[in-house]
Image (cartoon, rainbow, N blue to C red):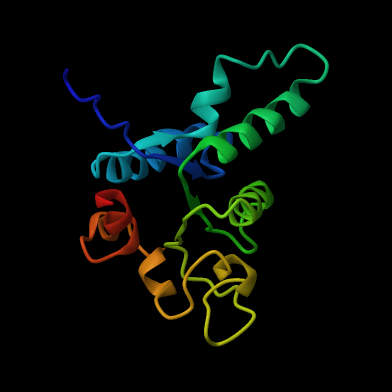
Length: 160
């Protein structure tokens, strides 16, 4: 009997880029490609909800929220784009859900502006509660090129 092929790990890519055609076309593809290059299934919320939600029907916004919550629950981890001052509110809620669910969390910020509460962390300190205290930097990415770095946490998690 042949052994079943191991399912690929899934990563929910929390991001605000789907709201803008330019960001969706220019910024999302390199992120998706970098994460997928590690053998991971990338769950991009705008793409996943696109064909499932009819925005002409009442209640569509509630349905979007429920679909995103379901995906965060079912994904194996979350990789969140936290650019902006402050970062996108929806992304922050998705991060909170993932942290509460005990999901591995990874942050991407190539925005040089400061949004720190402390000198220790580059963002609101609550975003780091889902990461190990001693090596949180390994879960934090400052460029698309850094995403595939073998020594960083996402690559180590992807390898199992």
